[in-house]
Structures are given as C-alpha cells and as structure tokens.
Image (cartoon, rainbow, N blue to C red; front, side, top):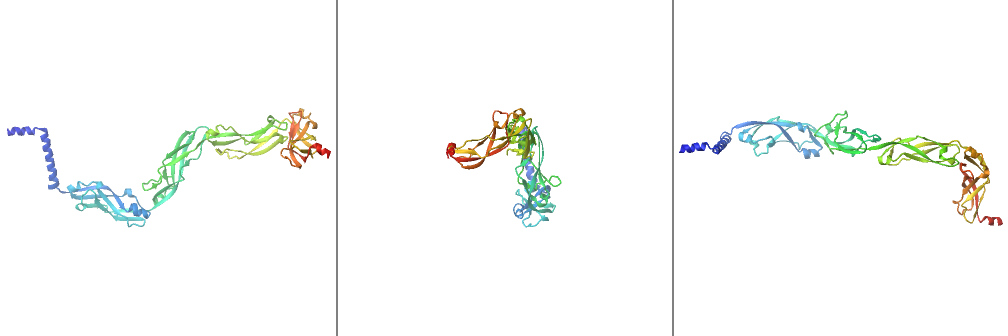
Length: 423
C-alpha cells in the first residue's frame, strides 16, 4: 500500500515541481552560506565624478576637460554573496577638486564607494589605473558671428535679398583652449523657386578659421537653433515719365521727350510693385520755352520700395518740332481782378512777346491779335507800383500761343477811373 502511494506521488507533475523548487532553494542556501567562497569580478568603464566641479571650480572660472574619456577599471575580490550584488551602477568613483585653483594637468587618487548597501571595507579593490590624470582649463565665454551658406532660387520676376538672422551672434562657453578655435557659426539653407519671404529655425555648426567643424560636448551655446529669414521680393524695371503741359501753341504731340535713364530697377512687395508701371518725375510746361529745354528731376521712390539702380536723378530733354515762332511788339495790356474802388494803370507801354504755332497760323497773327493780361488778385488793396506776371493770349487763333515768362509794371491807385479824370 505504501509503495503504491509513493508511486502515485512520484507520478504527480505538481509534486515533482514542488520537490525541484525545494531542492534549488536548499542548494542556493548551501552555496551562499556553507560554500560562500571568495570570488573576483572585473568591472570596466566606470565614470569618474569630480567633486567641486559644479560649484567651486565654476566660481573660479575653471573647468575639467576630456571628462568623457576618463573612466577606470576595478577588480573586486570578496565573498560570492557580496560580489554578486555589485553592478556598475552601484559603484561611485570620485575625485575631490575643491582645492584646485590653477589650470594645468594634475594627477589625483580617486575614492571608491558602493551605493547598494555592501560595505566597501569587506571588498578588496584593485584599481586600474591607481590614479587619474585631470586636465584643468580656464572657463571662457566668447561671442561668434553667424554666417550663412544660403543656396536659394526664386521664381521669375522675384529676387532674394540678404538673409536676416534673429540675432547678431552666438554666445558660447567652454574650455578656453577649445572655444578659442571657434571662428563663426554656420547655418545652411537650400530652397527652390521661392516667390515669398520665408522664415525658418535651423541648426548651425561651429566652425574654425579653416572651415572645419568644431565638435565637443564641453561647449555650451546659449541657443540651440537660429531663426533665419530670407526676404523674397518682386523685381521690376519701371519706366520714368514726365507730364507734358500744353502751352505756347504747342500740344503734347508736338513734343519729343528724352529721359535719361529711361528706366530704374525696383524691388519690393509684390502687391505694391505689380501695380506700378511708371513713375512720374515731374512736369514740363511747353509754354516756358521756344524750341527745347533740358531739366534735371529727382526720381521719387516710395519708402516701401528699394531703388536697386541707386539712381536718384534723371535728365529730361524736351524739344518742340514742326512749329514756327514770331516776335511781336504788343501794347494791348489788360488787368484782371482789380479791387473795387481802385484803378490799375499799366506803366509798361510795350512788351515784346514770342508767338508760336504752325507756320500757316503764325503768318496770319499780328500784334493787334495779341493781348497781355495780368492778374492783380494778389495785390488786393495795395497802392503803388508793382511788377506782376502776365500771360499772353492770341485772339482768333487757338493754335497759336505765347512762349516764355512775362511781367508788366502796374500802378495801382485808390479811386475809380472817372474820379481820377475829374481831378
């Protein structure tokens, strides 16, 4: 019966699993307590922590360089139960730098501690190397210019202006010897077929004077990216024009106009520039000259546009073609807008005037067809003699007119003409 019971138990799966677990636990307890022999373990690549680096050395403007390359290897000897508990993350290797005050290379012995509860005094530690070499450099901060390598193409009729940055420079900090190699910060942008202004935040590279990138985790920069704006504006050649005022028997069709330069190059917002086809630089009155005139005008350009040509003045030459002139001695002088209660008397008796028009008309015009008319509205109630501007009127011949500037002298007296005659 007992044999039968034993056979039944040994054939039961869960019974066997339970027995296996109990045996494993027994063996583990035996090995760790009865057979807890000394073993060794080698752990490599343990980083070094520098005490005082973040505060005291920083206050002294000093910095530890080449930290990433500084690691140590430890060979640990001790009881199996202790050694098996130790991982790399449980080991703390420290060097005290609080007494460092100068730059240069120093050698220091390092301390080893465990953070997992195992007593370091129960472990024999073999250090490799036995000390660490530390480079101390001066902490420095400099400003470096931002340069762009801008490679863009624009749509037809547009142009890209120089790139604009949201800052003039970058401020970088790090070991003096390292950052002294940095000459500038380089940003690169590649765009195609632009027809409007674009703005992007882009990465940059720190470069030395030879165009080689300077890469180091020991360099700190005040910003991670730079905002770059590429202004894209419309480009257009705009014609210069002058307003011709008919006069002196000449119409605008009788004038030959030459403007130098004929056009200027402008850039600016497409909404403004697309509607601009010409720029009027001034006006010329054909009655001011007989045959031709040459005048210089300032080219007015809106502040919203850029004058790419840099041209600020244009020369305008106007010639009157196929018209004849005649000089006449005219005595028919009249005054308009004489103030009530005043009498205007012309001191000027004769005035030589020039008449211009088609040859067949000029041949018919005589002195009695011409009047010299002066407007006295600006004199008001003034009394005395005054020189006033006058205009020439050719009666009966609308295609003829006076050329040039004229003035007559008038005597203005108080009283009506009849009253003056009675006196």
